[in-house]
Length: 457
Image 1 (cartoon, rainbow, N blue to C red):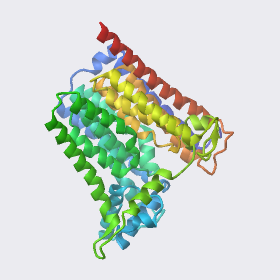
Image 2 (cartoon, rainbow, N blue to C red):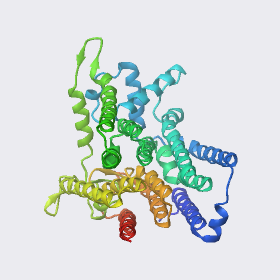
Image 3 (tube, rainbow, N blue to C red):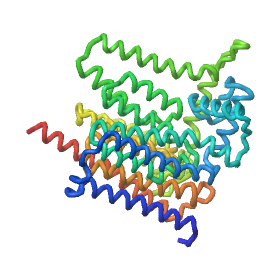
Image 4 (cartoon, rainbow, N blue to C red):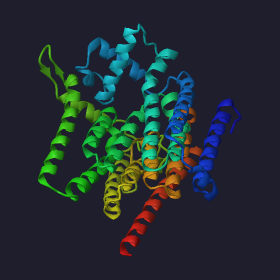
């Protein structure tokens, strides 16, 4: 590797966070350090420490916001301006691939506030770049706070501070939202909230958290089986009554109604009475059928076998890549059902099953981008919070470290135009990613066997 400032910076950042991860691993699980570490800390001191962590995390992100205007920032700027000038109606028919409604409303709000302040958007300007990266940064901080709150409630404040620090200082969270300007942290926050609300038996709220995540980015549907498992376990298998069933049915319909209402301004023009429901199917079809490649620089099975950026209709053995992707999704869902049945009413299984689904689809399904693994990180940390042991901690830390390398390689070294099938590093990372997924499966299998052994004895 050539010695450049970029290469040295990436290596140093990778090694620093890896060292931090190792330090906290031994701190949490080495007996003498653990006894000292878990000494009680007051709520006030913990709050001050959390404020310090979040403040430093914020100031680490701010300089990164103006270093790059890549990602989807041109779309954000143009869409925001179009909403101000032409409104929402007809937007889906004018644009081929778009974000869901709540994210479009966010862009409209950013445009309104900027217009009120007299700010003109100019692509490439530092101010414009900074403005559109703010939502992702805020959601990063909210996710860090959520992990603190959940961990302090279920474990200890010391551990809560540690996990919040590890998440907020992980290079991948800084890179994704602050440098690249992507918005994975927004729907990742709602993914985390949805699963946590299921774990704490607040299903009604989880419906709306799931819907909010869906209306920011469609990829939250990866965890749909987890929501269904929560409903089956808490509504049907536990103290079933028709009254509770219809209560949840009505709340679920209300959540679905929110989805339909959010699309209405894009489909209906009050001034003319024109209603174009076909625009909804148009945008959903474009979103589901977009980026038809076996892999889009996601370092997974398809990249390992040389199919990165290859059309998903290309044959791989007896079937096309897309057919194999569909088979994989069905297999993952079936496997998650088996896990749900084997774990029983263990609420700590929900985030692990959710992470398994996201991770498995990232590794083996088609059309995966390098960032699609991002929401699994928060779920893996949550899984550790609900059942703190070594393996679950490693399940969270390993992909958090590895995903940074994957996204760096994707954006800074081998973007689509520079990728070549003979490159070695993408395949090495693909092997490591598949190894992390294998470790997660091994951990889940071990927990299921242990649960079965305990139930028999």
